[in-house]
Structure formats: structure tokens, C-alpha cells
Amino acid sequence: MANPKKIKVLYIEDDTDVRMLVRKVLDKKGSFHYMEASTGLSGLEIAIKEKPRLIIMDIDLPDIRGDELTTKIKNTQALKDTVIIALSGVREQNIREKVLVAGAAGYIKKPIDVAKFPDQILRFLAGDKEVVEQEEKEYYHEQYELSIVDRLTHKVQELEISNQRLESTSQNLARNIKSFQNMLGSISALQSCQNPAEFKKILVQEIARNFGFERCAFLDVNHENMSLEVKYAQGIAQKDWGRYTYPVTSPAIQQFFKENQIIQIQKVEEVKEPLLKSFLDELKTRQFVFAYLGTPIGQVQSTEIREGVLPLLESFLPSLHDREDMDIDIILGNLEEYLSSESLYRAGFLFMDHQGTGREIDDNEIRFLETLIRTASYMYQNISLMEQLRFLFIKAEKEAITDPLTNLYNYRYFIHQLNREISRAQRHHSIFSLIMIDIDYFKNYNDAYGHQSGDLILQRIARSMVENTRNSDMVCRYGGEEFCVICPELSRGDAKKMAEKLRQIVEKLELPQIETVPGGKLTISSGIASFPEDGDTAYQLILNADRALYRAKATGRNKVCAIIDET
Image (cartoon, rainbow, N blue to C red; front, side, top):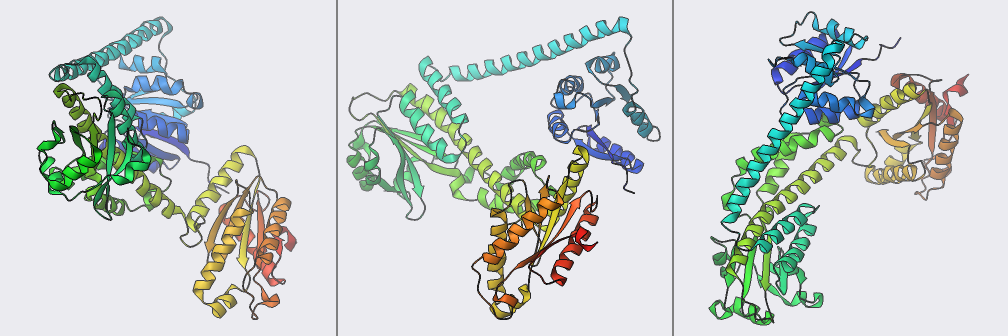
């Protein structure tokens, strides 16, 4: 008989030692499936995803008050029936009454009694609920609302102080209100960018629009020939972009941006370097602004970057399927290699000028532009870093659950998903079927053509199975030349039809003919087991599907058998 399903419990607490204690206490009891979170908002994400029956939370969380989080959870439709217990050592007057008014079922004071604690929470799960006397409830509800208003007021005051400091700093630069607004508008537009390429394009558009330059071009670094080439431009026809190139190794570039991120040349005659002078003559400019988008690599310590990246790394982990299968050190190693590459710090250069109007470039305008470029450099670096992190984690997650040869899900993920499908079918009283597939006489093919050709056959058959199953079906590589297909909502009879369809498709594939295989071609045999008739555990379903497959192979191969066919 299967063990009773464990009770899902989520503990939200920022103190690692307390979380470890509660985990030990609940693990010892053996009837709980324990989850944890260190912040209120991450705990809320886990709760929405996992839907625990019980949430235990501290009151004094780093990002949100526990009583406020309780109210939020109770107003979340998917969690409205979740039991919440406040576990806290906060010495605030009437804290118990406030958390009960907020929606908690009970309040347990720290330190906990480890002997009594599991029974305490079981009583709350059974329906016990601490209450505030009716005549006091209205009073404490009012006090709770007032405390929320006080905290919001305090937050607003903090924001106001921060804004005042920002305005005070900006006043030293701000002589032109319109330029200030335009700069903020540009930053706002850049914040919406999703990738580095879009960022560069929007930056050019914003500078041309908000600072009134007739021409603005982003010069990207071509690392193959180490030249600067126009990537995006306003005021320059796209057909002319290829005309304007300049060597990135030029001494003028190094000298210009040795100490400054933006330079202003009032008269092109001031430029003495011949190659740059010819470049500017080609552009027919008389005065221009040249800016560097990036952070000098010498100003950044790799250890500091690693420490700064670790919180970002942690933010990706909760969304991943199998974080325990991922070697975080490998990801960090790949990331450090990227962090040491110059491409992260030298994004490119911006050229700006007023070609035909004769308008002078205002010094005040340059100060605002310099602030924008400096801010944009850090924003670009952050976007680039996040994109690289996303790429590394997607790659790591895919590798953790995917068979590298066939690109199908691997054995471990198959077992995980089979158990999930069993749980889902049990909850919804639904059915599903499991098809186990084996390539007939595959060893003969390998012996005749070699393993490399055998790998190509595995890939071809795997692709045909993916292409000819439903989107809801999951095709996995079980091992060697064996495959499995999990078919949700599919009866035994329909699964046999699916397997027969796959059998016919593989039989008709244009694969090399070999004399050592009966009929001269590769075929597949399939065994089928269905939930719940043929088993209600992963072990039973796999065992029975494998027995049916064995029968198919023992009675001639190139056929489909279900476990029921044995009777």
C-alpha cells in the first residue's frame, strides 16, 4: 500500500539557523514535505507555484512585513484556503492580535518547543484557529490598518528623501530643464530594452531626438578586423553606413578616452591624427561629439564582479527545474570568462554632430549627455550580463534534462515527469498511457555500419517520433535504443493506435537496407501499460510496459503489445 501523501509546508524565514531547526523538526516527524524561502516575495512565488497546505512565516521579513504578506496570501485566489501560522520573536505590542486580524490561523512565539511544535501545526491543519474576541477585533483591525499606513508613509518619506538627494545632485548639472527631462526620458526608454542590440538602436534614436543632433551613429567593434563600423544611425542613409569605418586600435581612440567618456571637438582642425582627420573629412563635419559606451576593464576587479553576480545567480535558481543537477561552479566559471572579456566593457562608440545648421554644441548639453552616456554604460553592462546569465542557465537547464544525442528528454527527467503525471492523474481521476519502444535488431545495424551511423539512426527515429506525437505527449530516451512516450489522457486502446502509427512510420522511413536484419529494414516494437489499470506507481507502469514490449519482441518483433494481451 502506498504511503500517504506528505503535507506541503512552506517556511518563510530570513534566519538560516531557524530554518535549519524547523526543517530538522519537521523532517523527523516524517509526514511533511518541507519547502523554505528567505524572503516574503520569493516565498509568495513558491506558494503560488507549489500551493502548500500550510505556510509558517516570520513577522519581521527583510522585504515585507509578515502580517502584510498574510493579507496578500489570503487575497490570492489560489491560496485563500492555505493555513498560515505566524512564528516570530518580535516583541511588538499586540503582535499576536495583529497577525490574527491579518488572516493567520495562529501565532507561535519563538523559541519553539521542538517536542510540541509538530503537534501544534497539525492541530491548526485539522481546523483549530486562534481568534480575537469580537469586541476587540474591530480595534485591532483598525490598529493593523494604521500600522500599514504608517509604514507606507515612512516608505514615501524615504522615497521623498531619496528624490530630494537626487534633485540636489542634479541641480549642480541642471541649467536646462528640458535637457534634464529629455535625459530622464532617454533613460526610461532604455530601461525597457530587452537585449544589447535593441539598447544600442534605442540609444541612437533617443540622443538624436532629445539632444537635437542632426546625425548620430553607433560605431560597433568588428573584432575580426578590429575596426569601428556604423551599426545604427540617424541622419545617415543606411546605404552609406559601410563607407564609414575606422580602426579601433588607433592611438587617437586610446588617447581620447584614457580619462574621459565623452569628448567635444569644436573645430575639426584641432584633430591632428591623419587617419581620423580623413575619416572626419569623409563625414564632412566641422565640430562633433565622440562618446565611449562602456566601462574601462582596468577599473573593474573580477572578484568584485563575482560577488555582485552571485545575487543575480540566486535569483535565477528558484525558476529552474533541476538546480541540484546543475554545476553552479561550471556556470560561474563560464561567467567569469565572459566577465574578463573586453566585449562586456567596451560596447562601442557614438558619433554625434550638427552637420548643416551651424548650431554650436552647448557645454550644458554636453554635461547632460555625459550623464546619460555614463548611466547607459552601466545599464548596457547589466543587460549584457543578464542576457549571458539567461543563456548560461537555459543551456545548463536544458543539458540537465536532455539527452545530448537525440535531444529528447533523458531518463532522469522521464522518471520525474512520470511521477508527476501519476500525481496529476490521481488528483483529477484521469487516465494516461506509457509506451515503451525498442528498435529491432539495432545491434545488427551497429555491427554492420558502426556506432556513428547508429547514432544517426537514433536521431532520425527520435525526430520522427516527436513529429508524429501530440504536443501534450512527452517523448524520452530511456537508454540505448529504447524510448518512452508518456501520453496524458490516452486510454490503452488509443495508445495502441498511437504506437501502431509510430511503428508504421518508422517502417516506412528511408533507412539503409541491411541483410542481417529480417526484411532488410529497421523496425520498432512497442509495449503499452495504462494508468490506473496496469499500475498506479512508476515502477509498476514501467515494469508492465516492459513486459508488454518483451512479448512484442518474443512474438516476432515489429508489432505493438499491451500488458493485457498476455491474459
